[in-house]
Amino acid sequence: MKFLKFLSIFLLLAVLMTGSSMAVLASEPSPATYSNSSAQSVYELQPVRAGGGGGGGGGGGGGGGGSHSGHSTGRSRGNSGPLGALIGGICFLMITFSTAVVFRMRWYPRYRNSKKLIRMLENKDSAWKYKDLQKQVRYAYFLIQNAWSCQNMSPAKEVMSPSLYESFQSKLAWMDYRHERNVLEDIRLLEASPVAVYDDADDSLDYVWFYISGSMVDYILNTETHAIVRGNTKPEKFGEYWEFVRNQQGNWVLNQILQKGQENLLPSNRQS
Image 1 (cartoon, rainbow, N blue to C red):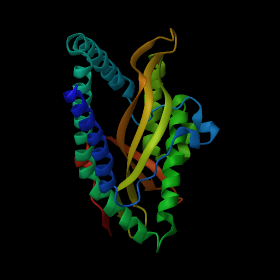
Image 2 (spheres, helix red, strand yellow; image 1 turned 90 degrees about the vertical axis):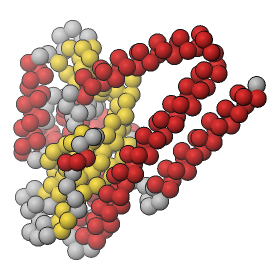
Image 3 (spheres, rainbow, N blue to C red; image 1 turned 45 degrees about the horizontal axis):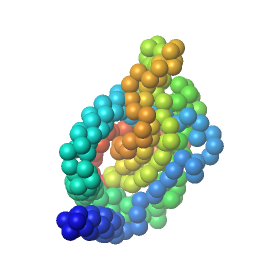
Image 4 (cartoon, rainbow, N blue to C red; image 1 turned 90 degrees about the horizontal axis):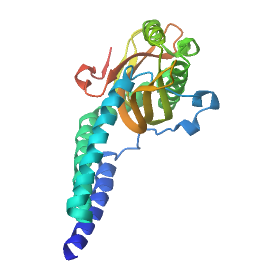
């Protein structure tokens, strides 16, 4: 009993340390957090992860891993009871905490420096107003997801570059040919943080990269049989990098998307 009490106290301290450590990493005002409930109703209709592309396939692999994990947990309960479950919970918490801290330590300096540069730029160019940029990212995010879920990107054309628009339309056409639809439920935009900025002299090459974090249920549905081909019916978090550029009208539009793990492809902050 004393050992169980000790482990319980250790687990509580680990949770408190997780919260305090994240607070230190976020010493500046925290990046914007959004949820689907805060978006207009038109964006809440069957939202889909457009940026993930083959996200349903990735979710399928995750679902398989989750099934195997549940199998192992069942054996553990049979052998060591609540003690094994408690130790397993502590290990999971520590691994999750360390992974999150390492990742945030990698990109947080980028966020801090990018936000600082945007604050400087907004004083001379209203297009760089930080709050307006955040609103545009949020607007584009839900608009694009809704268009993708309807298998027609036309409603989101205004917030996408021509090249990305054509790419998405081609992907949807291929999925339609295969009688597939990428379905997402309970979509949330958890975070939108700038991580790379470039201000061009004549504004034609301006860009800003945002780290996008979200949570969703993501799977591929066969439109003929209505059977789930692959994916996961449980919510999963994801991280991506979205690049917004200024079009000829001076509006910010989504130009390309990188996946988490492709940080080496992100450019550095600079001014012309």
